[in-house]
Image 1 (cartoon, rainbow, N blue to C red):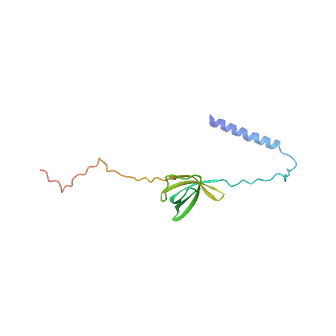
Image 2 (cartoon, rainbow, N blue to C red):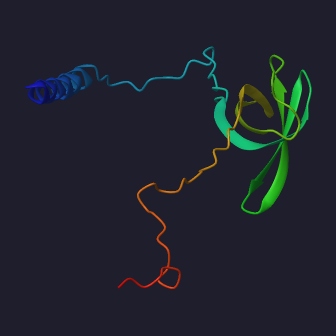
Image 3 (cartoon, rainbow, N blue to C red):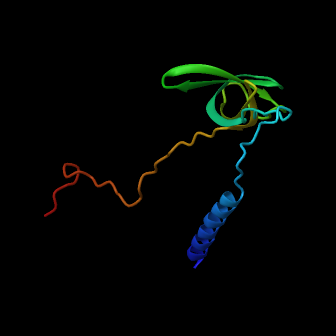
Length: 137
């Protein structure tokens, strides 16, 4: 039912837009007004995240070393506020914005490395080999 309503609404929109387009045409070409300046939009802020090892940290800047396709690079990020509980050598994930050619860290979180520990299954019992057991009569 919802799909049918959306389909009908879409068809009505397309036909009504074409009616206004036909009705609003003029014979004289529009002239550009030189007083109206064309504004150019500034490039958007790009949101990106990386993972790496902290090489240097201060209250305003953090340097992170990361490896991409076998190449190691060090990236620096400006901090809005001081980061707590992160030291040199910790593995971190940095969410940042690229703004005016600068990398501004919005979030710095430590990466927890999980180790998988396998326990011996209690269902399997070790049986003594046939050489260790005395023959039964």
